[in-house]
Length: 154
Image (cartoon, rainbow, N blue to C red; front, top):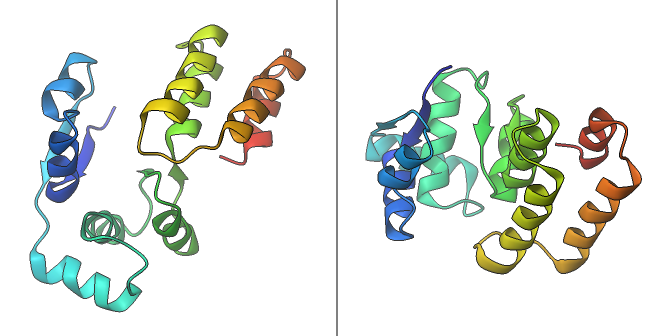
């Protein structure tokens, strides 16, 4: 499996939130930090406009360098829409959790607890109604993880 590539500003944001390299290593995530030239991400900001932050612009630059062929992990809706407009495959926290559940790496209970934690504890703005929708969807669609995945459009 390829290591996760973190632009340097994203790595800094994670460290500022106490979720940096040590946290990734503790859970076995292989990664590398990729510096992005300031001129490159500033050019992307000028081109894209004020819809995204500098760290997101670095993600865009790295995705563009891979011809938008790599899977991109982001919870930023504006960045997601821009990347998908260029043909990138994008997954967010909910998509990662659902994939982990569908591949039996998370139990149904752990998945529900993770949705609760995302809603309650993270900077991701998931509404309680969306959390309830996801939990209801899990109970309704017991027999088909693929249908669950399709239903989330992730």
